Structures are given as structure tokens and as C-alpha cells.
Length: 261
Image (cartoon, rainbow, N blue to C red; front, side, top):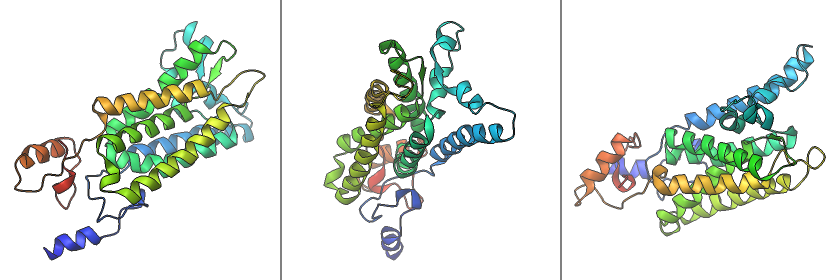
């Protein structure tokens, strides 16, 4: 019992920086995927500057390999570009906002959603956002999906909050997360409302909205954990704990309240 009390009072891991562990005792994983996406964004963005400084690039070689370019997709059948567009950022401000969002939202989202659900939500939301922009904006021939992907994660976390009625048991953490998501989303929507090349919207609010909806839909259809309040020994606990173990979401302290159902 003393060990359980110590676990409940322990400091949360850094990717749950806002959390009181005593109120937020749910299964988590190390945010490997979010950190990997952060590294890839950095490689693409900083790599272009490094190549340009070295005299072996035009400052956008890596960017143009991963961004959604309409001609490349439609004419040359480069079908992978909508999926890689989640790694593309347009300009320093967009890079800063999208990657700060990955830190303050993505690390925690990865921790509570799980590694592969997070990967699927991030990549697919970015792809949906890019494709919607391509389909609906005739003036835009180049699209980045970094903001679309992040807003997909925001949509998924909104669904996570709702289906688990999180304000009932983690009010402070839930409200802090909502404020953080609201600030980052507002910054991205502001950027999406500004033309970037003539009348083009390389950063597009059509893509942002589509990414948000896609992320929420994916979370609602099985990619966000649904927790049970069953305790060890309660009816249904073993089934819930077994699902948690299969999903790789069990905590070292034991599943307890955080078991999936």
C-alpha cells in the first residue's frame, strides 16, 4: 500500500508536464513517434539551409521532395507525397508553431494514445488535409501538411477528452491541455488565413479543418483509448487489463483505473 501511495504521488514524466499523477493514473507509453517526427521536421527544415550554405542546394531541395506538389501527384503519380507532406513546414514561423505544438501537444498525445495510433493519426490527418487543399483550392499548387497533421492530433485529443469524460477525473490537466491546444490551433489558423505565394495558400485553413476532422474521426473509430474505472478484483477488470497489455499501454504500477475497455 505504501508503494502504491508513492507511485500515486510520483512526479509525472516530462511529456506529461502538466499532469498531477495522482489524478492522471492512466497507461502511457514513451513518446517515441512524436520525438521522431520532431527530428524529421528538423532534418527537412534545417537540412535545406545547411545544403544551401554548403553551396549544394537551392534552399528547398528536401522541402520539395516531401511537400504536396499538385503536378507531382496528378501528372507524375507520386502518390506518397500527401503522406510525406506532414513533414513539411513553410517558413520559420510555421516551422516554429508546428514543432512547438508537437512538443506541448504531441508528446502527451503520443503518450496517452499509443505509438501506432499516434503515427496513423498524424500521417493520415496530414494527408487528408493536403488532399482537401489540392481538391478545393485551384489557386494553390503547393501544400504543406505539418499544421494539418498537428490539428489532426488536436482533433483526436478532443475526442479522447469527450469519450472518457476527462473533466470529471482530471480537470486541471484537461483544461490546461485545452488551453494549450487552443493557442496552437489559433496560431495555425492565423497562418492559414494569410496568402503565401500570390493568392496561393501553401499553409491552408481548408487543410487545417480537414485534418482536425480526420483526426477526430480516427480517434472516435478506435484510435483513442477508452478507459474503465474498474479496479483490480472488480468484475470486468481482467478483460480490460488484458486489452491494455495487448495494446502495450500498461503502466509499470499496474493497469488499475487506466485499463482500456
